[in-house]
Length: 278
Image (cartoon, rainbow, N blue to C red; front, side, top):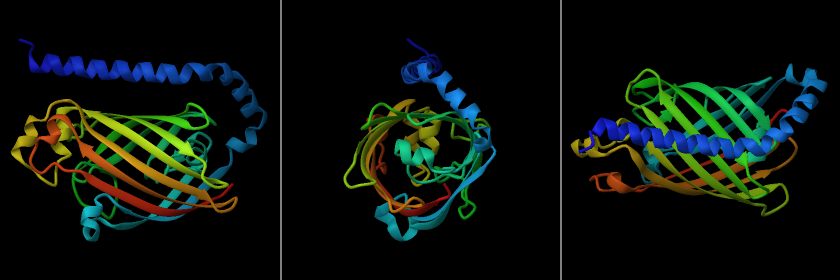
């Protein structure tokens, strides 16, 4: 009989191996262009010394079934200086790779090419709400490290990988999110993005992410892929500096998480307008 801790370690090792394979497959095609890109960057050193920003606002809800209690209007603030970035920075990845929304995350861009973005960050995470730190929300907070990879496979397909780790050990533990999206240019300067993803996490993360229910059966949810989600995002550039977007997503528990009373499908959405200083 395999010990539960040994089985968990095997699953964690398998997930990390899967992440390593994905990173390798994403990075290898870009290595051939790395040298030429660094030469171009060094030929224009003044650009890395400039401060760029993004400003905006958005209306979001993490559970549209409970719109009155979850709808929030929040500012969008992005700053970028060299390889350091706050939130969505100057919006370069937002425009090229299909990212949307904003998180108050300070990150370092290890690689920032038109078709590949890799960022490292450390952020305050609200374990009680499952969201990044928000000064307007209460709950238990922890410090979470994060590795973000956004890869543009071709003109239509994009790959997203997001790995997080709770370094204060306050219940968020480890997560790995794998996503794939398809971008369809509907009108001039606009995209309709269909995306789907699945989240792998430790049993501790699933147990603590179920705070709206706080039921005893959640202790039985094991480590593994327990949630999938799919969504639709429309974004459009109004002018050189202005853009707007709207998104809708549905998150569905699967496997053992689906069997727990109270676990349900959750629909979320947001709409926002952004100003880029370019």
